[in-house]
Amino acid sequence: MAMKPPPNMKPTLDKDLDKITRVEEATLHVTQQLAGLGAGFMFVVLAAIFAGVFVTGTSGAVIIIAAVAIGAYMAINIGANDVTNNVGPAVGAKAMPLAAALIIAAICEIAGALITGGNVVETISSGIINIQTIPDRTVFSWAMLSALLAAGLLVNISTWTKAPISTTHTVVGGVAGAGMAAYGIGAVDWLSLGSIAFAWVLAPFISAAIAIVILAFIKEFIIYREDKIESARLWVPVLIGLMAGVFAAYLIWVGLRQLMHVSLGHASVIGLVTGLIAWRLCVPIIRKQSEGLENRNQSLRILFQWPLVLAAGLMSFAHGANDVSNAIGPVVAIVRALHDEAVQTSARAPLWVMLVGAFGLSCGILLYGPRLIRLVGEQITKLNPMRAFCVSVATALTVLVASRFGLPVSTTHTAIGAVFGVGFFREWYTQASRRRQELVQAGDGAIRRADRYAENPSEVRRRYLVRRSHFMTIIAAWLVTVPASATLAALLYWLMSFLFL
Image 1 (cartoon, rainbow, N blue to C red):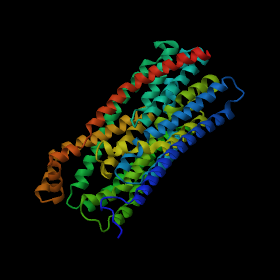
Image 2: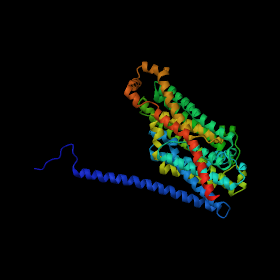
Image 3: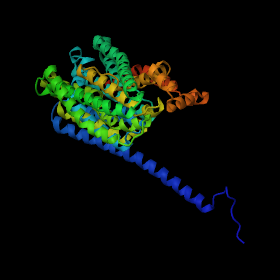
Image 4: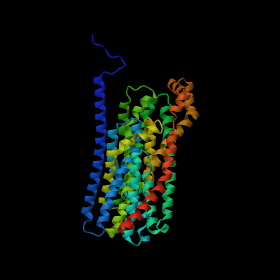
């Protein structure tokens, strides 16, 4: 009679199959990483060839092609590192799958960079180090090349260590450090640099304030109402209409400036009409989507998924408009210094350089974004679609306004400022809201269960609203980014000047 193996022991066949499965999974993981590296390298090579079409045969062509290659490398890194800011909250709230989020982010990044990215590119290319203070254009070009390489290396390291550092800090620090290494402290426009630093400090607070206002509105007029579904039917289309109207006005006012002059008043009228159309279209859609839903918060999460997807697309557009400068701002400066005298007085960056930056961002998002996309959305605070909507809209509005005035703000700062604003507001609102207390007294069982759940000491420790350990880690990374980038850029410039100048 055959002996049966103990019930807690796996048969040998199953063990061997498990081993083979683990080997296959490991092989797939390695090959995917190699494929990503290969695709990234191929994009850099194609970008260099693309640049050669425009500059071959002119003085400084080799330096320009090298700068474009490094700029493409930088753009890939920015796309990978900053995709957490764009669609991390939406993925964390499970409003859309990861693959769809990456595709939406890539398309909107390209649109934002090409349509409204010019203002911030100007600041990076000529607002921190002015070529007029450095008479030798070759020296200026090598300094910008060093800044690009230093920033790209730091951002690449942060991506693989899963540290969400600010790419804006790396580029600004690199440009300033390389400029000082080349021609001393006087090469830096300290007033402009101070304005940028002030915007860095102010942006997360503005984003937090906007997120708090939106969340307070949602809680007061939708979540803590007796008929939540009817309130959502009324106000969710209004929120979508406002978002569409504001974006349309911005797009007309800023995006068309390169083609024609449009006053703020005319742009506002167009935005108002667009918002009304979006509101009217969304009313039947939200009403149909809400049919059969129970009167509870879980149902509201369903109704806020589409608004959150739209907000994530808007945020990706804003990121492309602001952060494309981090990749190609120094490249534009080098092209102006070595290739085309006429470009130096133009208010527009060369289109072919903008294309490299825009498609580099999307390439980085698609190839490497998943490594970081869950940090902002899931590990800092528990985001549902309503709160994630607040974070995305607040960040997008703040970054778009900064882009209009040519300020290279940190999208990382801005997004995480909104996340923490939402988290701290929830802590306060839970204790202070009179309407919430009235619903508890009226017998809202869901709120009572949530309160009892939250009062459990072990649950408080496990699910504390704001992960302060992450907060301290991120703050520490921010504090060292600028000096580290400046130091590395200076060292690289000295090395390059020793080897090539």
